Length: 433
Image (cartoon, rainbow, N blue to C red; front, side):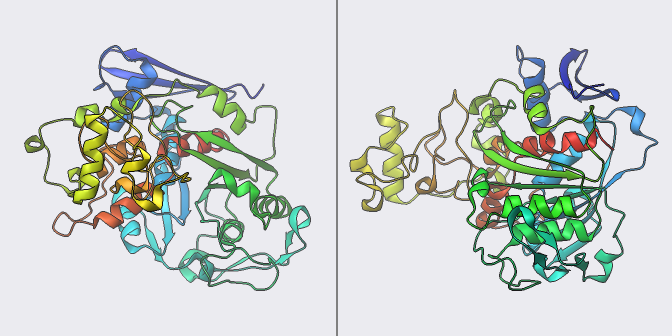
């Protein structure tokens, strides 16, 4: 037995089949093929998924109990969606037990898509009491973190996968307080405390790659806390969307931990990155089927883009008239001239290349490379979601009579971890359950 993992895609009749071959055997899932012709099978699988095709899980897992999850700092649920797809790929099913976030709208989206039982509209710091002894790699919890909410405490020992995407900002001394109320402080460690307090069988945390350079050394502290709390297998690494066959260059750092000890058959993140590696896809692969006449599109806010100011409309016009992708310095506002550190702002996407990172400002040309490659406008929420690998089946508009604001959509879509990355990061854990 070894840690070799093989992921294979193939066309079979009207479906595209995905097979995961690992130490425990082979698991197969399929998707209805509604992709473009002449694509590789892997590109066809994910394009069909993005377009909302039906996914058929491996029937062998029908009698197995669901894997129960909690998602903290959940946003709209990108990490849960990725974990759900990893469960399907390995013949299992994910049951969303609880979601925790300060954004009530994001929680509503989470519940609408996953049937999440317990929505906790609160600061995660208010849910757990913890204290750290020691520093860095010598850290340990002074006592077992205590879950303070009665409903959440009822789930202690019953959670298979604890997911978290905490922001990493505003750090201060680890040992000065417990139950911090400032959302800028130590939320990375708060997430660890929540997972440990729930006695989750496995923990998955995602963040920006730069988190490893944090001045408070939160990553090494987190690893030490997990090890001291009985998590025998701890792994970490960076995954890139375009390296896995996506149409975006976004990267995320993942820290995963399991109470199941490492063995010869353990699949590490580095193994996942190698086994799942696919050629990057261009923006056109993700969104070209949305290039219909506006009259044919739905009236949903997902397909609408804001009217640009006269200044921004002129900047977009300049790009297209001169067939440019980067706005010349003389056309930029003063704040972005003369050696600015954000050369991509007011930039136009390339139709034949992956997009740069989709941010929470994708409806504003001055906040990134968000101008459509072929249309004189910014990309729509629908297009941004596709590039982020959210399928059309994912419902961002819970109540069409009261649609979310553009600001909310930008936050949910731009802040989310791409589900494709969530799928890859959680797959090693699913293989162990």
